[in-house]
Image 1 (tube, rainbow, N blue to C red):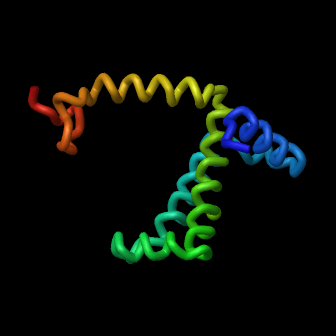
Image 2: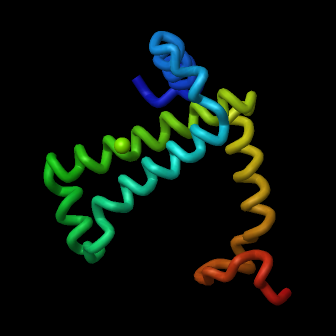
Image 3: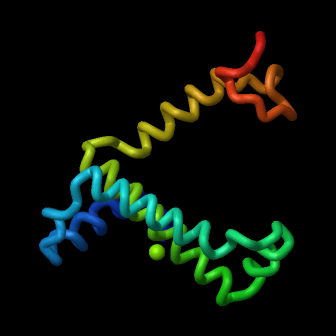
Length: 120
Ligand SMILES: [Mg+2]
């Protein structure tokens, strides 16, 4: 099964409800939990070179560690959107459009300058 956002949101809600954890799932708490999970992901590779990260990903144990943190991040993100009443699919779609308008291919190709810093 692919990553279906509606399904994931339902699963996350059910997980919290069954454990009576909804009381802890305020937007603030969930955002902090998300940040914690991002920290866990960063921690795995923080002192590694790009080559070492590539080597880690080539091992089943290393890949599993990274996969687990990426999944934690995805779950918290889905849960945040759900608690805020945000349709994550629509929000992402809208943001892609905004980013494409902010960063026209002809203007930005090969540069990393932020749209607000660009001299036009
Ligand atoms: Mg984790």
